[in-house]
Image (cartoon, rainbow, N blue to C red; front, top):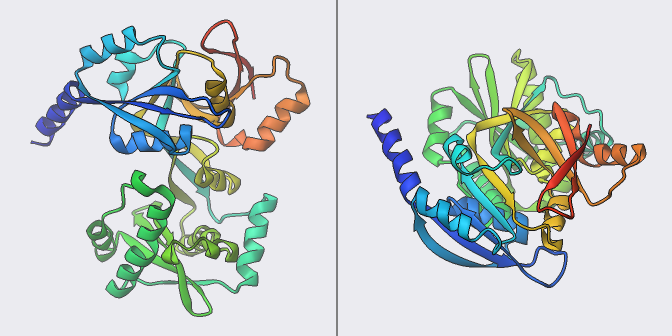
Length: 354
């Protein structure tokens, strides 16, 4: 039955593909640009945030079949600045062109235990945790779980992601904890719960699942609450004999705050799942250039996860290349490339590997 359902889901996905036109300003000028997004509404909202900071107009074009969408894209080649296509391997085979990028929807990251802060920022976080005398406890009671989910987790994801949120299911969280497949770690300051994180543990595998701060109040960040969820999880799991920790999921755009924080803790990243976004450029307008230069990302290239950053500089010195590496902390990826704008064609030329 599950196989039949998967087949039906795939056929439905290919016969009823949502299509939108998004129009707004990218931040480089007051003039607007138009992009096409093809896929799920939640992911459309995410791309709208990345490209337009959510300040854009939407026009829903309805549901298209695979073939009608193919001809729509072919006819509208010169009409839209960019095209984003959400999908998996079949979409890549059908839609992806040689110069397109495929950006994974999610990345997973792992780190060796115990966490050893080496960056200046991570060391500052540790000092902040000690200064504010933060501590932790395992709190698996129903009352604590209810408090975490409704007073910490939900307010945090809703304040950060708004309509893009696909929240963790409360019953699933309770089942994991009741079945001893997970624990709730509460972060405390002056005997008050200010943050929490759910850690999944099964055999020799551990994963940070979901976290939140009290009422979604970002003022707790300055006390080290979010940093504490990582460092205290490391401390707890190390004492239990674990040597590696899965840091959970992150988006593949390198400017993402969650991904940046995990990178400074020494995480190594890998693709999670088969879904992602095909990114196609029809023009290299000022808006398109602004998007790429300010939004480097991890891309799948021949099944390898590689970092990709973009520049409008035609000649790069060694110092400039080092600056890119330092700015984006690209050591978390096996390989990274710098792409230079090709003013004669609507695509980028790869110029350097880092």
